[in-house]
Image 1 (cartoon, rainbow, N blue to C red):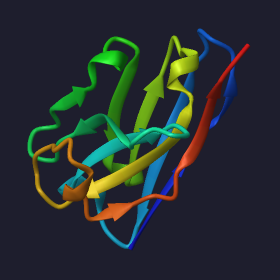
Image 2: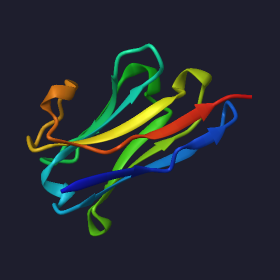
Image 3: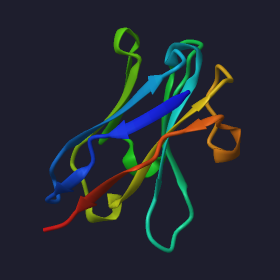
Length: 123
């Protein structure tokens, strides 16, 4: 059972990136999938989640209107499309799978974690 997060990189403010969270050993469509991020010296922060029950999506206020989470069940992958990026979005981004069908903002609720992918927003 493994989650692989990818797609991070360095972009200028206002730029875009798409993060991917690919699963192996299990199917993501039965899990709620969350994205978290952690900046140096800060606690891990919940960013977004997509439920497995009805595909509902949720976002932290600071990314609403800029980030979009989605699933591609055929590819067993969840994406986080990030647009209008800001320097404060700089962090290591982690995806996580929760066997509950509904979303939870508490990182302790998640069963599996990816290794993290670094996003740097700087001019």
